[in-house]
Image 1 (cartoon, rainbow, N blue to C red):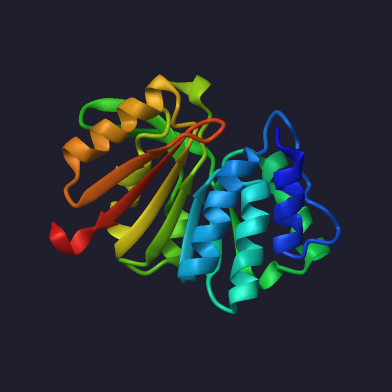
Image 2: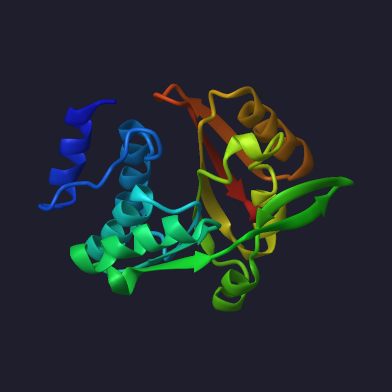
Length: 210
């Protein structure tokens, strides 16, 4: 765990009260650095996250610094949702972020059953073709094989013409297989692998090419 990099991110985002990280559950600092750089550079209007936590806070702060954008974070654990929400008032980013209580429910994709986030509330809040940045760090991999695969099939109708997807833990075998499945099943996707602490796959979706 690179504490110097965490401190660099704190300074970059002017989070004088520090970054509330936990070694076992928080995203690695090099992954956070990647999504912060993208958010500050491209200033997406709509950011969606699968799983909430430290990444939710830093992305909301990026929106605040850019003066535009909103983060919608799907969270299946009520205790994690409450903990993440507790950050917002402390850091003054309430207006730029919404944590959505999204318990896992059964979905069937291409004949395979998965447990994935309930998206009813998210879909009610977002217009079609609106997600410009998607950060996938859940559900946990131990729940099922290819646990994070449903993200693109389930959210596809809400994804903008141009969207960048960040898949954490991409060094794992399941995540590598997920990226291959997405590329086989959905057109207009380019991907690259970044050799981060836990691996990161960055996918560029260009729906206009579909």
